[in-house]
Amino acid sequence: MTAQATRTRTNVVYFLQTHGKPAQVARLVQVITEGSPDAVVLISHDVAGAALDGPGLRALGNVHVLLHHGGYGDFSHLDRYLAAVDWLDANGVEYDWLENLSGQDYPLRAIAEIEDALAATDKDGFLLYSPVFPDRVPAEADQGAGPRYTLVRAIDATMRYDYRQWRLGRPTAAKHHWLRPFQAINYVQPWIRVSSAYASVGVRRRRTVFGPDFHCYGGSFFCTLRVECARYVRDYARANPDVVAYFRTVLAPEEVFLHSVLVNSGRFNLDLDYKRYIDWTGCTHTHPRTLGLGDLDELLASDAHWARKLDLDRDPKLFEILDQRIRRGARMSISRMPS
Image 1 (tube, rainbow, N blue to C red):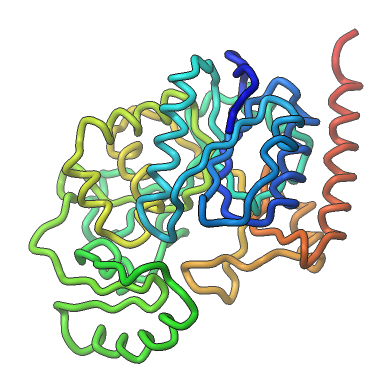
Image 2 (image 1 turned 180 degrees about the vertical axis):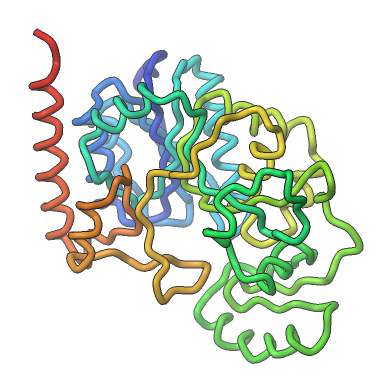
């Protein structure tokens, strides 16, 4: 679905994994390309989702749409991420940073301001992480944000990463309903685990890929990484097919794979401030709360670069207010430029 020439040099590549809401995706792409005309926007769209307006998106700038098979809480998220790194290399795109976004993210400040902050930092990435199993990580190891941040409860962490999972197709409301009673067995024996959220059944493993030299770190999949980090993860996946095979059989591998590979390498200077405003208040560990006008004060006071999840159909006024702030910030950035 890409026809125009690919720009071969950009400071930031904005990578979007999308599966629906075409109008909201178009609005996000427009605000990015208006704020950074030299940016490359690469969209990985789920073929099962509502169709995007490819020509309309490409008309907004250096925008490219790839079609992939999506999933939920499985390795497809990472397949699409790694495919994006491959695509950028194959098309000769030189870049400094890779922003990992969803179609329901939205900037909280001018795109130029975000890019200026990235250009000024000495960090290699903005990635929230901590040990998923704190009791299995020695005190001298990288503790990340722990104990201030926990990916999931201990019982959920064990189910996700200590059990070999079999999926019962894509999760649906009906599957969630009929699987939920079976979760009672999770509390009476250690061998089988049922997840209604992921529509899966797991069997306890004799061993995992984690150990003294490779600890399990986890956090948000949505992050900002230098090209060196993104390529390191891609190259690691190529060189370690057995590790990738393991992660294909766990729940929510996108919340641990990047983190475990990068942190265990010891090569990178990672900032725990991942520059996202995400609110999990009153939610499960599978879906953050959808933000609205009631969150505006917190959003505007935040130091984050991006907010998620937003819903254009539910709260268009929030987008209008954020657009005003973004464009006002863009004008201020231009006024500070030397003549």
